[in-house]
Image (cartoon, rainbow, N blue to C red; front, side, top):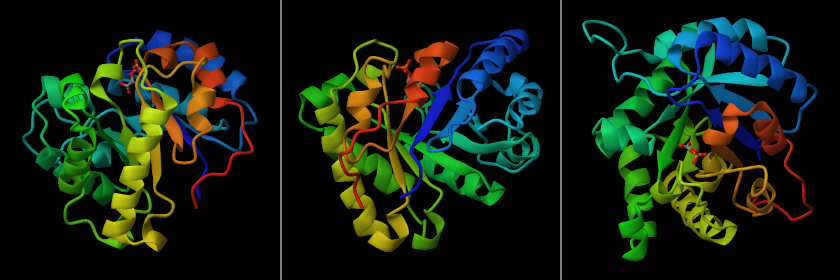
Length: 258
Ligand code: PGA
């Protein structure tokens, strides 16, 4: 089992100066953290500047999105190779805000996963249902479809660096988080699907993290679940103290999946 992964998604927030302030504070607060992997996804414009501040800290960098293409006439796009070049280890793919505002489909997500792996980035693949889908009893069907189509064509040898992020759309930015039990149910179903698709040996290190109004007050209950391997944090990642508290979630003796 890999270490839990706590990632901060800054979205379209922070100037360079604001990002520097946040990282300076954060790196002090997470100094010496070894049992948890910490990553931040700042806006593209700040990444180059911040990479020098996180050297000698446990903080890694993630892109918030990437192009399906490597280079060429794609005005406004940023490729996986460019993200790697600027020091990113991870990239978020298929966030619901990209699906909603930029018409990203499961097929686009699939192309972006291949683009990320080609560039040597670890994809954090987001899935999640809307409130209508949940109320209609379709949650598991929706997230399984998103995973099946999103990961189409990947072989067992390609998934060890993959991270799946379950982010119910209704919990993102709303302050209304899913309960730990609701999340555990979905993660458990996703784990079974991934084991079935790629085999237990290949998929055993694949982390399934939760996102949607994660806060210092609720992180411990999520991390106590056997199938929750970390968190994708939006709003609370913009406050160094809150994000650091999330990184330093309380370890419980409850066993994790094997
Ligand atoms: P939130 O965002 O923590 O502000 O709900 C989560 C996300 O969008 O990844």
